[in-house]
Length: 167
Image (cartoon, rainbow, N blue to C red; front, side, top):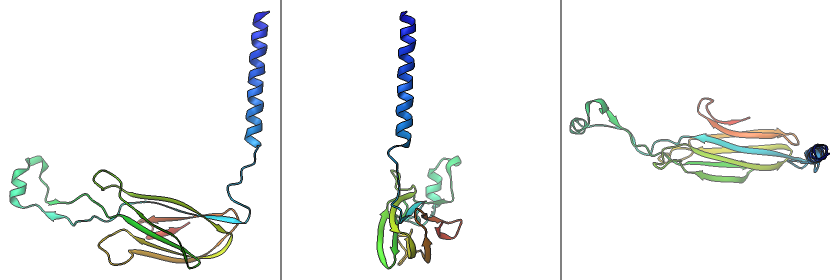
């Protein structure tokens, strides 16, 4: 009798859990964006330019190194921070500097930012600077895009694809 009662109680608990899971998987309804909005995501992982140029080792410096560690030139590890500006329809909506990661400031700079915009046609201008020694921006892109409701446009930076990419 106790065994049947235990099995019945366990079945009721599992059934209650399954019903709760089913209800909360459908309710409340989740809408990531309002019906008339689109989203622009700015997302990149990029190594900025080196802060200092590589220089050749002197003969004295090489003589102090063990034979298996001798290199021809010394390159500092620190990298430039990456700066990005995004304008939508002539208005600056994002201006951010992303410092290099790592204890020696030699890692990649990363950024992830979501911007909600009304669906429709927009003029997007992106300016990118990854070298602090450069006078101006190192890469720029201006493009007119038409965004549908709930569409996501990603702004990325890829050296393989020639710089700033809208996809």
